[in-house]
Image (cartoon, rainbow, N blue to C red; front, top):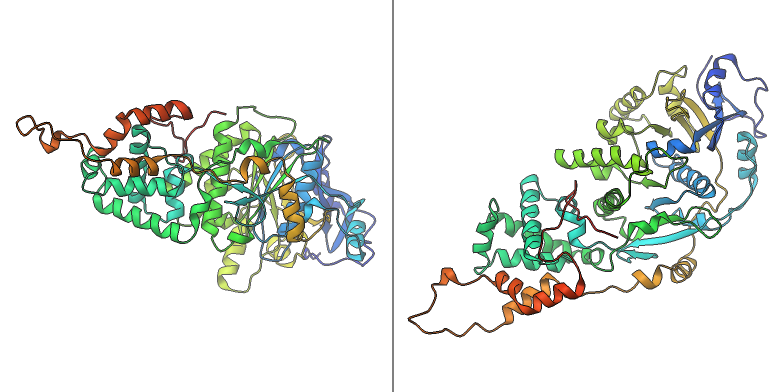
Length: 522
């Protein structure tokens, strides 16, 4: 018997009787509770619509992986899963790198290809659109602006964006610590640049010595990295109003889960930036959400696209923080699916946390491809399929699947022809996107950037102050006894008044988390 997956007859017909060898696989997906329908079992070149491959709804907070070569159908898989989650009242977050997922807001278009796929997979296809919120990093592109303050983003994630090494990352952490304890709010990049510039100035070098472990040379490297980062147009992503990740957990008035689509085509040439911003969103959710344990359905399912970019070049401490976040956020009701080309892109400690797997086709044109293929096969449970042959023979919209059953045990590996999405499989036009954004209830809250007084303004104002009059040569203090510029700012009446008026955590150190991100009460 050949295990190679081939296309069945155009009418979707196949053997009426499921072969004996395939029955245990089909039985492994016969769940009794609520589940998402992924598609129909493929066996010996035929699609069996009576053998449905499904994933239990409560198991979607046990995380997952969607992998496969370019053009194999990963985007449509995300769309299919997001539609069914929304229909069952689960909010979804999708990162739309290519702009292909915006069509989820509109009903799909039928046709011969859709009808054929529906017949092959036993799907009762009916066009439907879903409630969608469109987001955009920094407001660049079509979407509600998603911004973060520098202080909440934290030194670890910012170091990843800036491309700093481990020593420089630790030094940036000391700078954040200094700003926290001195009450210098870091809202946008110019705030951080102002603090670093002050610490490297003649007046600020005594402050630098007081931090410990931070050299003038390293601070200078950080300052140059920040300046170059701003010159590339990155300043728009940091500032206020900061996006509240609780807005990702909303339901539509009809009870369906809101699908939050982060539109990334305008910044797809800055992959490390958006992958790190996705990690900030996830880390922020982790900090704010309460423990809920196992629930009937997730509070949110978060799809992390281009996941390999997050792990590339990451320090051991950074990877540890990711692993711990992924492991612990499950108990807060959030499921995370990493989307990438091969499981080998994901570190083994993270991969071990992913209970649900959808593996699209892999290519094996080069020795490296063959090595990656063999490595992928080893990550699956034992299977009656010849997985090396199957994975290279899958067509578009087909995948090898294993998930967690209702009792938490892995299901048998199942080659699957996936169902067709019921929403539009293509992008909305720019005008329709803009109308959706302007009509959003979040538009009034986030659309307009706010630049309030923070570290940059305070340090600039302090530098502009005239020097105090000397009380007399006999009583004149030695230069070493003069208060530093920052001490003057923090001790001023203006500073105390501002601290009271904005009601922030000024004047005391901010509690920071695994990634150095600031905890915020909401």
